[in-house]
Length: 124
Image (cartoon, rainbow, N blue to C red; front, side, top):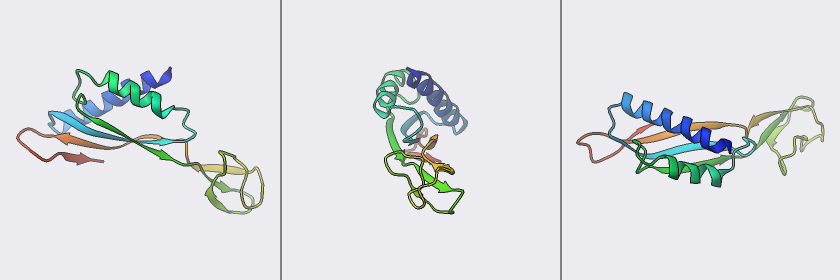
């Protein structure tokens, strides 16, 4: 299950960024997850809930933004959403396409808890 190693790396990155800002905790973690990233959202969320215990992210909520697959056609120049995860251009039916979005796995945003502060700091 590669979601475990992904979550371990995600938590390390969150903790490093939180420490750099002098945070005492992380309250929210937002991740952009492409629909072709090869990561199962439910498994990622379950792994996050288990691995966050004992870390600065222990009270953090994980927000997953699923990024749809969008393509650009090198033949007709059309770009837009793919249908049913197909790499075929919806305009000309060509196969000479490239992916614009839908493969990413990005830490998009953190909400941090700072000492003595009642409102979290957002770090994007």
